[in-house]
Image (cartoon, rainbow, N blue to C red; front, side, top):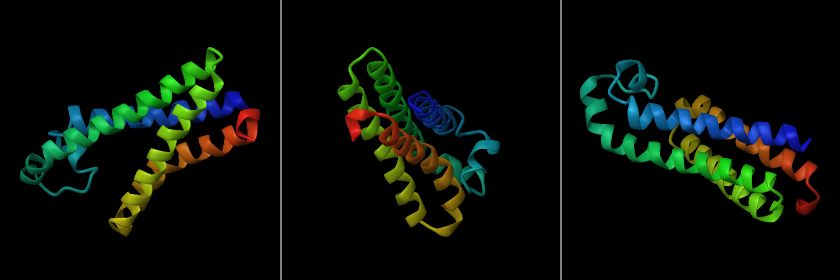
Length: 131
């Protein structure tokens, strides 16, 4: 079960790296900012600094989850789980905040929040340190 949990945590991290790429690298492309509900290039230009910053938050969460997986994998289970739980919890809470901004963001919030939530549940079910 821990292997499946690790894969789900890695999936959550990869999704957050993808969010980083969209928000911090590719934001000026219409195909990207339209995915985020913006109507025109002027809106994209106005929100670009915020998206850039937000993208890095996503990158740092992904790095935290991946480093936690590695640290767990080399035998430092308590430290690795602590890092993984912290970053996954931040991902889940960010998705809750996203839902609170409006019903049109429910799909994005589910994409952002379900993998880390599933990862948390699977780790609790599979690792003796968490029980």
